[in-house]
Image 1 (cartoon, one colour):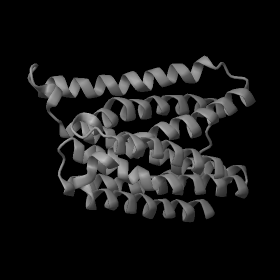
Image 2: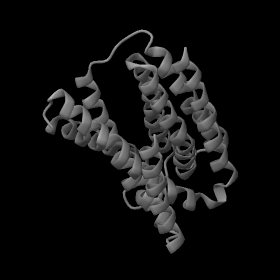
Image 3: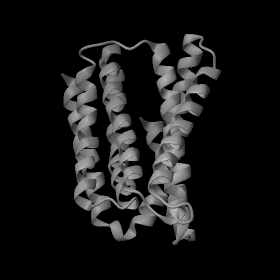
Length: 241
């Protein structure tokens, strides 16, 4: 029951983060710069350390999560570029934004949010202290998950109304993830593969989508500072969590 209640707190954290991004969408490039830093920080200071810890504890081959990372990165790249090539002319698609790309990115983040909820539920399966620590970490960074969802949708020419719909999806999925852990248990080996795969998704979204778009027309020292701030803030949150 504690896992379900805490996952509900992630709903509000995600929702408020997304509404913040909607309100200040005229400053979207600054939000995107910060978001890219957060994604880099999540991969570097949250997901990778967890992978290393699980590989060491389980005696798994280190190459396994790295293979999963490459698969995740390339899969998202292939899906995104297939959409772009299908919907655009060869000469102008580089500067044209496609709503489907934003939707695909938002769905990937919703999948991450679902697994955040799963993480909370599995943490409580270990013991209440571990579950509480996981929940604090998830609630802390789900504010930026909401920002990420809105940013990816608006950047790719989706309407504000549709962006809010996907924000609600992203906000609900942690609760669904926590509820799902009442029905199953996941092997530690599977989690290593999942973490690597999802790290590939996040690296692609941050490095190949959000960051280049943020600097496309508004490159500045302030933008670079916000990216660094996103990395530092994520580092601090993960250390305390």
